[in-house]
Image 1 (tube, rainbow, N blue to C red):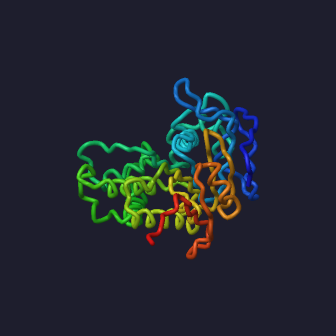
Image 2: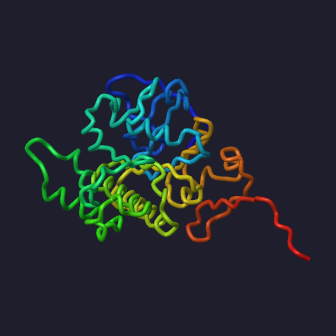
Image 3: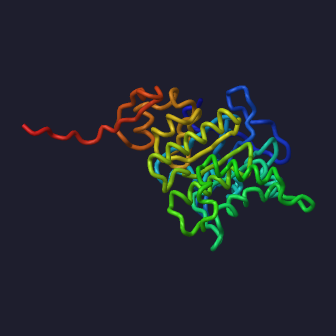
Length: 289
């Protein structure tokens, strides 16, 4: 756990594993990265290690750098300084297919090819496992079937993706990432477009993948209460910096929420999960006489 962002020197080639404070080496980490778009820097000299085997959720207000950090961790965004480490080496040193066999990504916005059907889109998650002399296999078929069943999109398998609702499409994209069968799963706002029932269903699925199958899951979420309930590790960001990180019960309190979000609140124990539950104070409502 930490209360403020720190920095660590980066280096090329094989590097020492990042310390997560849990006794487990971090497979994925950022070392003193500077990241942004064009000439605009979002985060400078930022270091973070994703605890291996965790369900890590990145939270913070809009435009604080959450998605930018996730894009850098997934190699979609190249840091202008520092480096991202994957399995002890710079992520930039791996061929794209090798990264895709280790790390699955659901970006914030995804565009499906026109006229593609659900089953065919999910099957594209198996591309990193294809080789010149090994094309489609029984293992590929089983992975696609299992991914569609887990996300409850099997009944949609023959439908055109263009015909689906926003929530249905989001579940299909998640199925494609699951079909990739990577030990690391990165998801940028995966509950977008989902109604509350399907949000909970998806978060339950991600927690199951983490706890029962050992996947390391990293997600950007806007709902702090969802983050507290499902995450084993939270990274709280503001203005491109990491303000605090650790277990939800260890770091989430009223002071942190006001410092990160500017929201006066009280934090109580969730009566169901016993995790922190944020109650905004808001403006008191006058009761009629």
